[in-house]
Image (cartoon, rainbow, N blue to C red):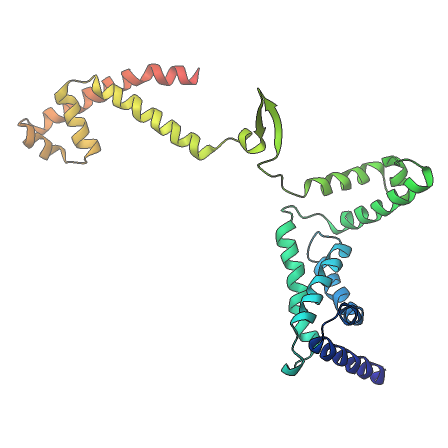
Length: 261
């Protein structure tokens, strides 16, 4: 067994040196076949950590293997397997980042989905038509409900694009993003509306009352200092503030009532 492993290692290094000196598709394909087990091993490991089918990860892994073959320098003295693993795994992780779903599906459902697709293909060929959910579920030895839940979970695991077309209104396309409420923008709109209403109510107050309220509440000037600036007592300032607030509440009340209704 050790002799066979050493022979394969020697053969692999011989091919890597040959490819480095004279790159060719023939030699590269030989190297891919020789290191296919490495790709399968990593694909199995990654498939247990995500929702993607093993077969997809394996195919992506071969791209990483090819990149490693093209960039490997035999003169560096390191083992090719150690050099290739980061490329193979990195290609799979890059694929998962690009395609990754935000919803994790139970492993049983992922496996059931994979088996179900194979059963669908087999039944389509034998029946000459697309099989029903009941026929697929029967072959899988599961209930129709579980098979439908598996299909639905697979379909819904990928997030929808906000640019996805929802409808067309008067020759104008409406995307999913257009139908979503922007709560931040809505909050800013509400604040702006309230500010305008308050500004309107303030403009209807007597000049001295408005000045006192703006000085105390907006400019945060102490009441005693405001009283000194306009030449009245702090008690007078307090009375003007109380009266002004009552007038503001009365002026804003109709707007609040109409908004709630």
